[in-house]
Image (cartoon, rainbow over all chains, first blue to last red; front, side, top):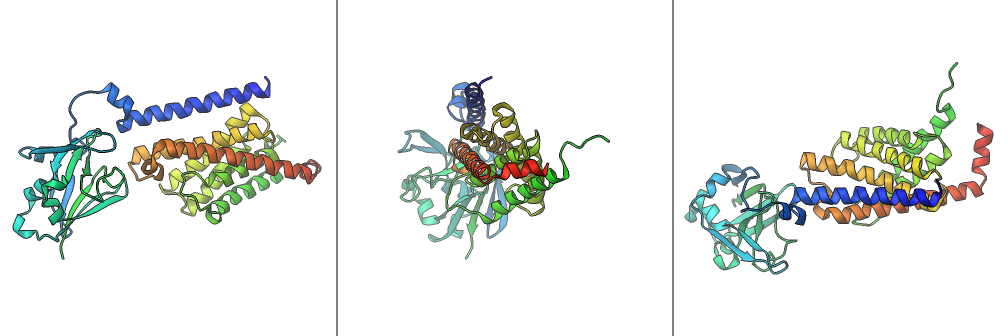
Length: 169
Length: 181
């Protein structure tokens, strides 16, 4: 076999492996192929999110805790996709009384798998216009999305949330 | 007495190459925020090793040895097993590539063998990342971007290896090796 033919075979093998990786990854992460192959509403199925206050675990926010919470959403600027879920304000008030929160109380929403976090004040969270939402992802996890300035792009959103904490002074 | 597959001299050379990979990983850093950029160094070393010791399995042995060393030194972001397997697979991948392509001194062949090796390392990291749900750098950056990075730097590593081999040939290193045999 000539060297040229060997090189062509090697390129085909590499292309096939790369293609296979991208297809598998797309299927797992909810990409186009996944969306094309699945239908139905998104659900919060990826376990519970620990909700802490001053380092103490108050509760775990799970699918069953979403009953009774009004859904909210908006269409994002970049992809014109509906980002729908529950207002962070409503989720917080489910576990903590409003009197315990001052306008500058800081709430940190983080994702250890993404290495991302966002610190928000209660003043911003309580303002419904900011649309600070725990939105559902295709993978069944939650992501923090918002239309608020400095938190209105995908890069700044916190995907795969696994911790919500109220910081006490 | 049955002749050993690798001579003591060849094993000694391969161990040196393995050590060189670990040293390169620790000491040489490119100011690039791109996944897999270190492949430019170690795929070059693996390709050179595969030609200096022209036997099947030489690159795999370098990968395995460097993997053991790196695991003991605590290199890698997903633990010792991941480090051991990813380094080993880089060697096995390069060996498989050279099994098909044969000539590591040919620039195109060396680049493709480098790609094979680095792609195998990527696959190990990717599988570990999926299994562990760990924050692997390339998951955060985006898989396609990381994959392109691994392939490009694997190819550049292979090219660097082929250029090194050309320089070694010019310097008469392979003639010296034949005498040593």
